[in-house]
Length: 261
Image 1 (tube, rainbow, N blue to C red):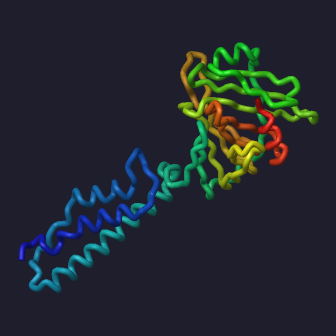
Image 2 (cartoon, rainbow, N blue to C red; image 1 turned 120 degrees about the vertical axis):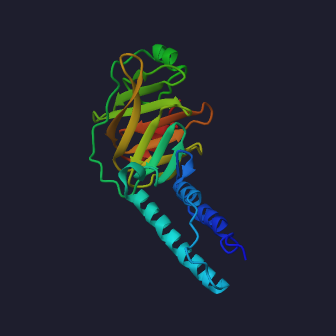
């Protein structure tokens, strides 16, 4: 019997194992695939002593198989525990131009004030810069608009104050915005419906928000801040992503969102 006959099925078994391991992709390639590729590239050398019987040969293969499984499991555990890789080994949800990263083990985020719209501009100017008309909710007394970036990668903000003086912010941007918003939350958002049946997500707890800004020289950069309770949805007619922050009551947030025109 040829020396590699008994081991012929091992690479295929490794590939089947890789397909069954559900680890999120990292740079387009799963961690399992990368580990398996390395194992297969460094083919396990044959034992020094030739096995005398087929039973002894398969016994050696079973021991080698167990050692490969142990090595692979160890690499995957390290991937989960290593901070640079941790962000990839989580659940992701895409809502329009927002990526939602669910990290149940993340530390709690302290509540923070909702930022207003710096350097507000007239609605007509905001529309020109953003490439679309700003959507305004009913009852937003004294609302102002501000724009970050330019079409087609502009973020248009609408800001106003409630009767109690709290700041409310409605961010609007194309669904394909790149780079866009990233929310990191330790509590999964709650799926909800607007009055017209549009699907939305309610983030009840404070969470970390990464968002794009443009620097003085026109280059994009990212800022990170704590965000409070937020309602997130996509307007089907325009494809715009809308993000409403500053209304801690879910029912009221849904009412305001339904009035956006």
